Image (cartoon, rainbow, N blue to C red; front, side, top):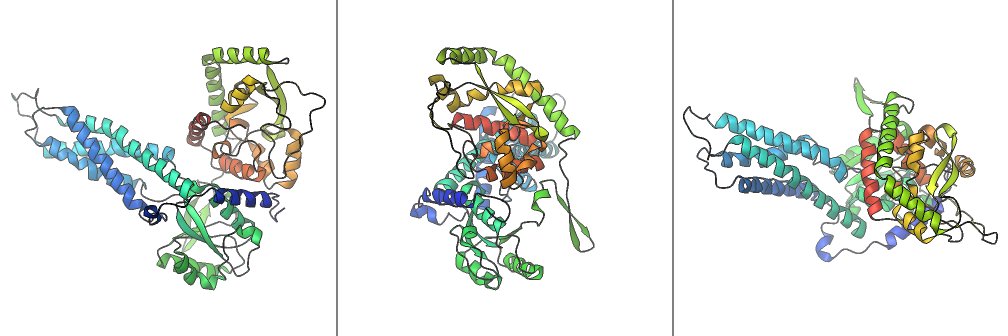
Length: 503
């Protein structure tokens, strides 16, 4: 067990080793691109390429209409305007947790604004039609820019999606990403290193740790210790690091400030882990009292009207989905009943909001246990789930588990109000009591209603995976909750079901 109350360091270390063992060496022609140093330039070029094809397709759509006022020529201004608008939406800044779903809204907005701005310029530059002139066979600005907008709404996000898929593949297959130095020691440093290895989508590769006190081997997780903070410049140049992450450390604040300033002089991005990281969410902002920066924390209130709205919408959606898929539910119920003796539903006590226990429903996927079946023992640091003990799954049960169809009856739990569509997955009371004692912040998951799917599930934390990791991801979800985040999780859940893994 770590000093922070987590009992999963050996398991996490094994997980990191397993992840690294699956990483392939990139071909030689890809080696120069591994640090992603040309990420911004490449993204701009791809957006320009998408903009050019947008205008070309729009012109082809117009056909052979006469353009005696150079409207088609002026419409090419859409391309540079698009790049400028995307830049104003911070679409060329590197962010750790940005995905294609995060980019979709600002990209679509940028396309629409760029088309509208180009139309305004055309309207100013092109003189109006004179009385008596026929316009039937001539290009009109509105016709051109509507087509540009519609083509751009499809082409620009599609190119961004392809870039995102390729980047994610390279990060997972060949560990693409920027090399990062970490200043600090202890559980947070260990957590940062572990998360970089487990989630290569962040695009960071830890290349060294600096601190005045040498961290333990368990905290380093095979990342080299490069000495004290005085060695920072030498370490940065030797490793080619482009990112500096400052974690909690015994190093005096003045030294850390000098280190951060030196990193900025070297062109590195600097990220700082706040001391009170548990209460800092995505809504925090910086204000200044004179020259002193103050971080203003904006907490999420699980008892507030926003969550009441979330639950009401969830129940309405659950009712609609149950009505739409009722033939599927009835068909699965019949197959379960015919597969083996026993009830259609499997009911299991689970802990929900504020520690309240309710019966969580699933389609029964196993035959009844025989007295001689071996008892199941949970692995240390792992959550219960998946196939526990002897495999008693029926044929239809295997299919339902593989496709998550066995979870569909939980829509009834949502309709009843025991659960919601998106939230932390509920756990059995006996395990909750154990995890609350041994796992840091585990009990804080129960501030909100349990969900059919959640932030930890769409990040692969299903079945017998680390409880500490689940608690970390679930609490992140609660503290950064929004309806948009719920929508993102639902989309990611659909994508996860399309590449099924058993829970």
